[in-house]
Image 1: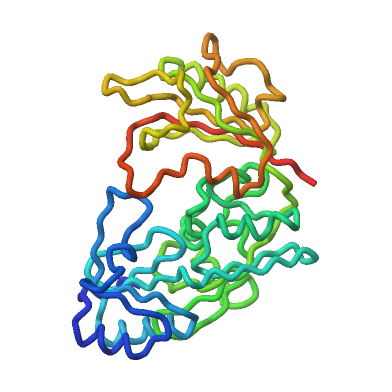
Image 2 (image 1 turned 120 degrees about the horizontal axis):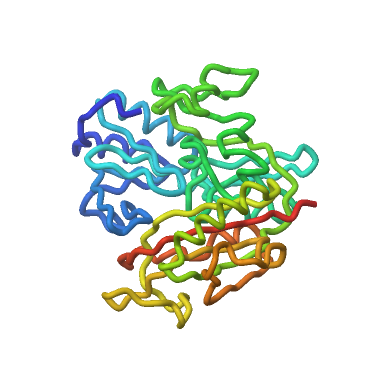
Length: 331
């Protein structure tokens, strides 16, 4: 959808504002800074206009007016899509979710987050593979691949859509699936980008009860042993057990344990390994001499597991090395 490079003009803003049900926010308007803010507080973008669309008709209007004016379009699903200069089509008001327990499907609108989806599906004992953070948008994660808690047993997020409703660059809305517009459906699932704006997904759902586990903290000097131990463990582990390690940036916060070792700057620097389904089943340490100094296993829905260590937007980060193992309880 980024075929043009022209910024939003005053005439464009006036035209679009008079054509939408949802509000259009421009630089200088009340709420502009809040509307353009993204999860990572270090990233600053200044779009020429932000359309908080109320429905699919608003999305079609945005595409048509932007195309006629030659204005760049960026799409914001539940999370991150904000650019500079052009028009941001903000889908976050489109957050409806419908779970069909008989068909084992979940229909999710384009502005929902995975926290929304997990919360809606959990009472039915269902889930679809998502990511690791509850505030991640469904659309961005799905179209980008999607690795998360259920990946080893249920596949990538991008492997689980059954269909998608898409507004194309010419303003038409179509449904893409294996049986309808199959080439577009293939393209959405890894063929690149800029094929349109997805306003709704239909996902395959899997029987999942709870995630079992919680955070376990390790000193940085034990990082190599823990990583090697994890490699040995995961090679023989059942597919219901998954894991990841990553170097992350998180702010210093009181939820880190008091015994966490401190860096030279005085901030708590830890190798964070969140275990799920491991502490009770695999009691041996992951490596020699790298026992954790704190562990907090528990049983919780997928939506709750994705909330831990979600830093406030306003806080600036400190470096940690993070890892997580997780296991699903299948019904």
